[in-house]
Amino acid sequence: MLDAILSEKRSIPAAAILTRPFIPTALALSSIQNMPGYPFVVLPHPVTSLTAEEALARADAATPYIEALLVEGVARPENDEIRIEGAAETSSASDLAKLRELTEELAEPLRADGADLSARLSAPAELTFALRTSGATCEECVMPGAHLLEIYRNRTRHVFGDSWTVRLEDPREEQVLR
Amino acid sequence: MPLQLVDPTISTSDHVVPCATRLQSLDGVVIGLLNNGKTHGQQILARIAENLGRKYKIAGTLPLRKSTVSMPLPEDEMDSFAEECGAVLAAVGD
Image 1 (tube, chains in turn red, purple):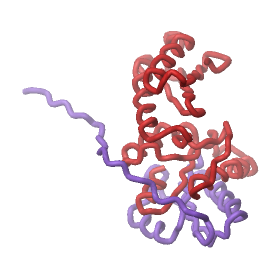
Image 2 (cartoon, chains in turn green, purple):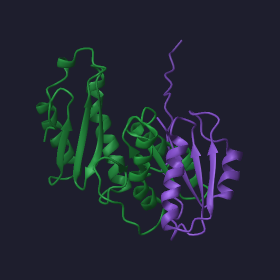
Image 3 (spheres, chains in turn brown, yellow):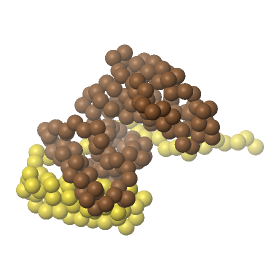
Image 4 (tube, helix red, strand yellow):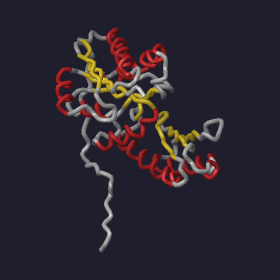
């Protein structure tokens, strides 16, 4: 990610490709490098354990996104699995800054219990929070997903507007809460 | 003696650095393939370049493997790499 940013700073357009666990690092790096909202392509994790054929299939699927990052006027395709983070059509750099701030605010109380939270713009005017409880000292000590969703929905709509949809991926639940 | 608390985080300036101007086409462009040496990283980058080459008349590719995973390319290496490339793909094979 940092290499792509350093290339951009040398006026060479770049496309950074990374896997999902590295999204928080990428967002932090782009912010530190004064390029908040710098878009990147996210591949499903992991890549190293894939067969060669599977890895090449990921490359094939990612190609249109790479092209869209490099070439002006090329629209990125719609796809739920491989996506460009930080490049949703309706998002601006200020929206992404607000998103990071909101996520930090909501994650802080969870971290006290060893859990964590991330968020992504999953569609125009739609925010998906992902709860991680694997590090929690007591998984059930973390507030139930339905309650968290209510809080997250209220805060999101306060920040972004009443038309926003909020989803919550809670590993304790079988389905995404909405 | 009073305690002095130090904030270990760094602050960023308000100055936002713009991205490089996007290309009109990849025709005639050398695409740099910068990988960190992890499994499948180079193969994925090469395949993407191959796919792009079917649509554009790219001038070639320039693969480069980083010596360390966790650090960015050294400044001088990035300078010479960027001088030879018209676009860069950077991938993590995690």
